Length: 174
Image (cartoon, rainbow, N blue to C red; front, side, top):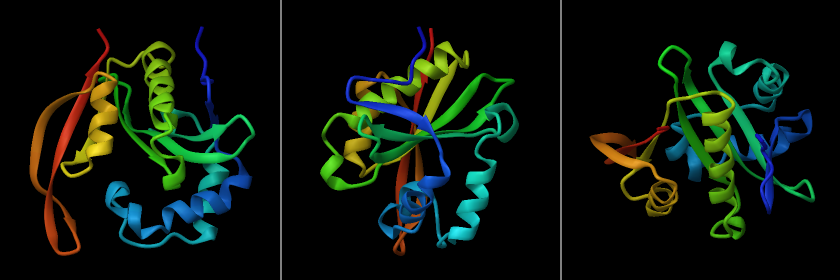
């Protein structure tokens, strides 16, 4: 059975009520490095995005889900992006917003749920992610779920005037 519910969290579609939550994430300069963002987003733009979020992954090439507790508190987001139907692959990204909710297993559970959904429901052959070499928590999260480090992109990300290397991790559905 395919499910987006785990033991402690569930993954759900975006709702109009998520406007403030997404606005806070998209405008948090501390996470711009992992989201490759360089400018703030207005509530107007996020509202427009939310109005379009019902569209099918095959049309928009992206699926963004909210990581939610069972008491309906938004904890973070998890995305499939660069969805490539022809080659049966997608990129994956995850963020647990508040540091108090990190290291609680929510990211691990969300990642497991999305991997399962991607391989069983979407019939993807592979998932990949890009992780800065100094993001030890994400490296551990993805490698513990079976992702393999398949390469290093040197001087790939410019952060505060310093270039950082970025790893590419891949999980193939066998």
